[in-house]
Amino acid sequence: MKRRWLMRRALPMLLLLAGSPILLLAQSSGPQALSLDQALELALPASDAVGLARADTHRADGEVKRVRADYLPQLTGTASYIRTLESQFGSSSGSGASSGPSFCNSYTAHPSLTLQERVDSLESAVACYSALNPLAGLANLPFGRTNQYNFGLQFTQTLFSSGIVNGRPRAAVAGRRVAQLGLSQAEAQARLQVTEAYFDAVLSERLSGIAELSLAQAESTLADTRAGNQVGTRPEFDLLRAQVTVDNQRSQVFQRRAQRELARMQLLQLIGLPVATAVELTTTLDETPAGGVMDADSLSVAAADTAVGSRAAVQQAEAAVTIQQVLTGVTRWDRLPTVTLKSTFARIGYPDNGVAWQADYLSDWTIGVHVSVPLWTSGRLSGNSIVSEAALTQARIRAEQARDGAAFDARAAVLRLRTAQASWAATQRTVEQAERAYQIATLRYQEGISTQTELADARLLLEQAQANRATAARDAHVARTRLQLLQDLPLAGADVAQTLSNAASGQQAIQQPAASGTSGSTP
Image 1 (cartoon, rainbow, N blue to C red):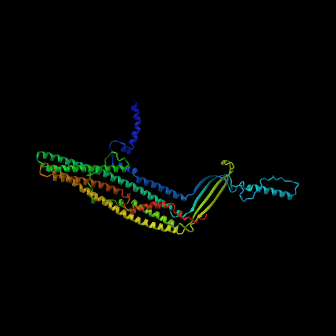
Image 2: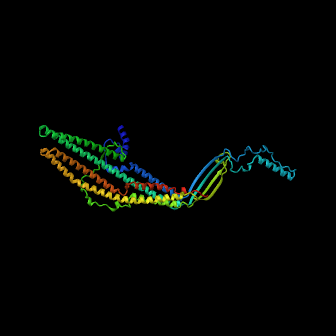
Image 3: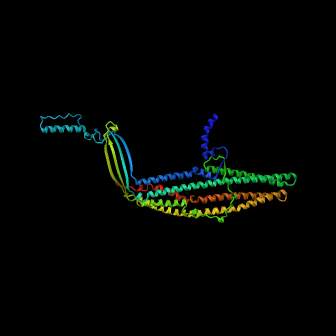
């Protein structure tokens, strides 16, 4: 019963782990199979550059929404409470104030008095009461009231703004396009880096195997030489030479193993797995593909794969020009007024006991048009225009540089692939010849008709040929992947990177282009 209970509790966890390749690769004690496709699937979530690019895309979406909100009305609710501790409107006597009466008799009309006497007594009573209570007539006004509640709504609608008319939303959309292209570049770069790291790990494992095979061959030769030396058919010089060859090859094996571990750790770091994770790379280099190696002269590349206009970096540079054009247009028209419609509605209450719901609320509603005009800026607006025009010129020059760099990069990628294909094709027959030469050298050495030097040279040539073939296969795979991702890959060069940086900064600057040109406004 306890075993069945444990199985029921453990089954959901096993199913969860089965659906998570990352957890399986990271937590399993044994080596797990890892193909190139799986590594590419893990690479994007683990890439910091991709994460930053996605956040930048999300920010650009918010910028577009914020700029488009300038077209629409804005409504704000307000609520406030004010407690007056001491007011200038209160009844208090200062040091220079004349002292008034402290008590006034109540006014009583006497019918026996004449009309003039009754008017005089009435005026005397009013004067006494006014001197005693100077603000009695303002009792129902808001001045100096102890408690005040204010609940209101404020409406704002921009009627005219040079920034909106001259295309701030268009610049924001261009900035979002820059961010989206940046995300595509980051993803393509992450895929290429993982592909290179994966094949570097496969290549280092293959080179380590070649070195170990050469060590086994050298140890076999040492055993034959030692046996021949014991029976007197091999001199001591051959024995010493064979021992030195084994020791040198063993050092080579140690170096190849270290390079293999470093390549594996770099790959695991790129795909977000602990460097101690044991994995088995299942995608091979295909050193001798079944269909043979395509000749470099027969390699055809579609024009769309290397088109300059389709490169993400070129489109980013052109979007940067668009943004800078909008900034320049805004600075040129910064002297135009900004017209805003504003309306405020409030309900105001002055309760004597401070309780909000026991007050008699009064309405206060205003509407007006505000005009903001820069009258004198001491050259600031003209300076902004000069700076924007210079930045536009730079953006156009960098866009041209991006187009030239894209054309060069496309030719370089095709040339790199052609060279890798040619090298790969050349190494196929070389390995076969080196293997045959080593077999003959081994047989000649065993029959005693050749020297150990000849055998060592044949072994070295075989090891070099096998390593060259593996390296050429790795270069061909990486060059093919680079050509496939060429449209989204970033261009190398500081000028292009500066162009894209300026595009991002220009997209942010377009959000508040008129903030510096609204001084001297008139309500």
